[in-house]
Amino acid sequence: MRRPDRTAAVLALALLVLATGCSRLSFVKPSAARGDSEQVARTYDFSDGKRDRKGAGEARAELLRGERALHEGRVADAGGHAAKALGIDDGNPLAHTLMALALERQGKAADAGRHYARAAELAPASGPALNNYGSWLCLNGRAPESLDWFDRALADRSYANPESALANAGACAVDGGQPARAERDLRAALRLDPVNAVALEALARHLYGQGEHFEARAFSQRRLDAGPATPGALLLASQIEEMLGDKAAAARYVQRLRTEFPQAQAALPGDSSSR
Image (cartoon, rainbow, N blue to C red; front, top):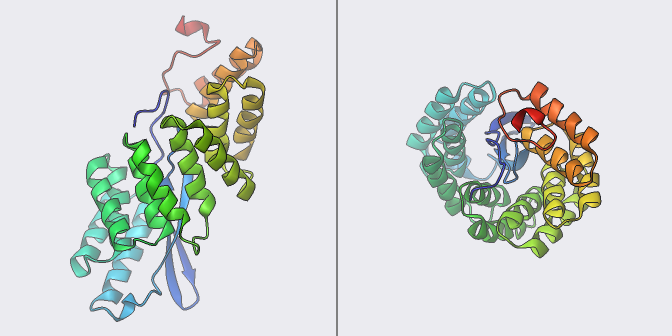
C-alpha cells in the first residue's frame, strides 16, 4: 500500500532482555503508521519447550548474538546469525523474524515478507508474529489484507500488547478506506495506551481527512508530545494549522521540519520556498 506523504519507515531494532531462568527477545517492529514511528511487537520467549529440540541451545545463542548485532546496527552480522539459527532449526519462528528484520533493514522488503509470513505460519496463535506480518502487509501495499492478520493477533488472549495490533490495524484501516474501523481501533488503542504515538498520529490523520480539523489538532499535538517528532508528524501538524488558518503555527512546524529533517523534501503549507 502506498501512503500519501509517508516517509521511510523506521526499520527494526532489537532489545535484549535477560530474565531469570530464560532469555527473551523483544523485537521492535516498524509500525504500520505513516512516518517514522516505531511500534513494539513483544514478546517471543525461548522457554517454550523448544529447548529439547536438537540444537536448540545453539540456535538460541545465535539468535541472542543476532539480536545484539541488530541493536548495534550491524545488520549484515544479524542476518548471518539468523542464517546460522535457521540452519540449525528452520522451524524456529524467532529465527525467521530475526532474518526478516535484518532483510528489512537492508531494503529487501519482499525477502523480509517471506520470513514474516513463515514466522506467522509457524506460530499461528502468536499475537506478536501475526502483528508483525500484518504490519509488513500494510507497509507493502496490502492494507485490506493486513486487517485480517491484526484480527488474528488480537485473538491471542495472552498477547501482552494488544494496543500494538490495534494501532497498526487502525492506521491500515485509514489507508484501506475503512474510516469506521480506523476510528474504532485507534480509540481502542489509546484507551489502553494514551501516549501510543502510532495511534495518535493515525487518528490525527484520519480526523484531518474527515475535515475535523480542531480535533485533529488536539491529537496531532498529543502525538508530538508523546515521542520524537518525525517528518510525517510535522508535515501533518503544518497541514492542520494551515486548514485552521493559523499560518504562523504552520510556519513554525515547517521550520522544525527544515531544521530537524533537512533531508526531507516536500511542498509544505506555509513554506514560501516551495512556491
